[in-house]
Length: 347
Image 1: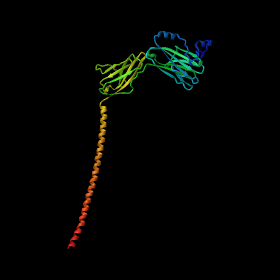
Image 2: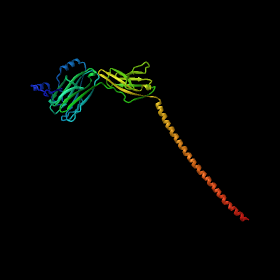
Image 3: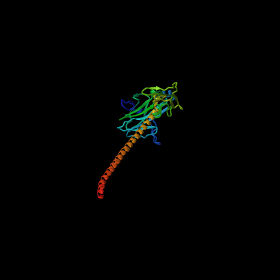
């Protein structure tokens, strides 16, 4: 843990001289209203590193933190967060790195309090970084800078600067390799068809591409067997294509494209669903069966209605016939007395 010279612990007698040596004041520019970057004194370790990796490019990244009373503005080159007495949320900045580089990280903390009461530390993950970082101040702004070189995957990860005053403020730089891009939705195809899977890395160029298949928890490398079921190629160095021919239901599952960079690896997966032609046919047959059943029900209802109506008509006809018979019988009976009466009158 490092702080300004007048921080906790025994104070050396020549305090003003020490402060003048360690704190190089930087005046604010009254012309454009911006604060120029504070100068840092080079450390021997830093000079040795720069000489060793002078052929690598330098990547600079900044984070700015401001307390509640001293609010800052957000600039295009900085990530700014305003934090108060009851808020100590960290500021994070994600950085994509494809190849080895010299890295320069700068954290800026603006406070209305005493800069001498602020402790500054750097960490990689949970590991405390003891050397190779600098502290400087100007006005009410405290600067700290950490410079290092990333040459392998072990040096990737999160690097954080800490400013401990009343509350601990933290800024974190997250280094990761580029991400791959592909279709997120499952790819649906049919048995016997061919399919082409593609993975792409936007603006980056992996050293190598590999493909894996998995139908569970185990990933199996996809090669080019003798039957030429798989064909792996790519039009550009930043993309890869896997062609699978004569698909079967066993080919269903997840396929992973794997990109290898100098500083790590990145992968994504594509889901394939292989359907049999019986699947759409089953749906068609189910719909046809429903239609036939519906038509049969309608016909049965129609036949039942017609039959019921016929019974009703037959009943009415029978009643009419019986009524006519009854009327005929009554007519005969009424005519018989009249006939006898007429005969008696004739005599």
